[in-house]
Length: 138
Image 1: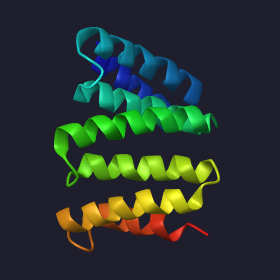
Image 2 (image 1 turned 45 degrees about the vertical axis):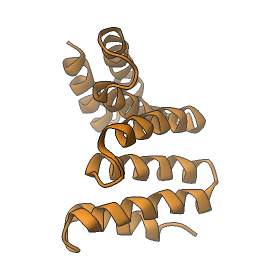
Image 3 (image 1 turned 120 degrees about the vertical axis):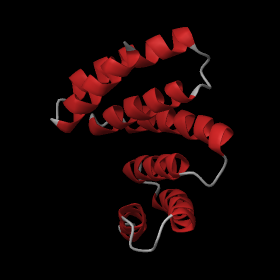
């Protein structure tokens, strides 16, 4: 059931229906936390998705807190050199940028780029996205 809630939330977010997305993603998180401890990878996915929806809604500080939880869990499970860790670094970087903290944001985005370059070819879309995010900082 939690996966279904999370999937619906992702679809709603893609449609720009951010408040509804958040509600579904919070339901998924609640279920995952009831089934597993808060350091489980399913919780990390839900923390990430809730953070993205909060970011879309302009709740930048709260979004950052959720995205940092997802990063912490992913680091504990995967270590530094994993694509999901790179995604989390990028998401935290974007939230820091939203909060007017461009230097900190760039540090996270450069960590993501380093991981992506270690995992993928220079021309891979994940690498391109990391380059783009590093390049948008003032």
